Amino acid sequence: MNMQEAATRADVILDDVFDEIRPEVRWTHGPTTTGSCDVTRRRAVMTIVSAERRGNFLGVVERAWRSSGYRMKSINNDPDVPAIFAQTQDGFGVSLIVGGEGQVFFEVDTPCVAESEVAESTTRATAPTYEGMEHIPRPNIRSPFWSAGAP
Image 1 (cartoon, rainbow, N blue to C red):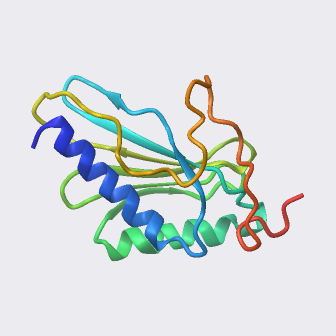
Image 2 (cartoon, helix red, strand yellow):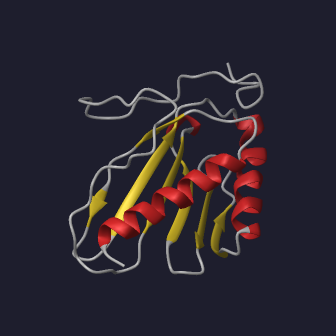
Image 3 (cartoon, rainbow, N blue to C red):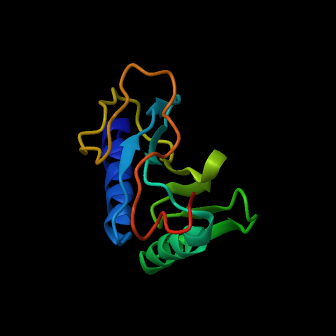
């Protein structure tokens, strides 16, 4: 497997978890980064996930990853910045981290693979892409379910 093939596999891992989240949330691509032999793909959830719904959200993701056979490496139950870290059977690291103002970030780190060029993801984001902006803004899309209880 080369870096492009690993990046494509990372996209599939991300697509699969977003397919499990119901009702669906809107997301945008974060930066893709490459190391000497690995790739990291990122996505930021732009749907507001209220503090009241955060546990539900993490539960959906954890169940999806467990049902896919992923090994749970660490679960941080901090009420403000919870996170889940897991690993796929083929060695990809997957994580969900809740950051500032409750914004949810997903990241997939590939194992070390053969060096190659890496193209941007071809998966279409479901929220604006914020191209040209220095930072992705805080979540700004409301959901009747996921945003319930949020101001």
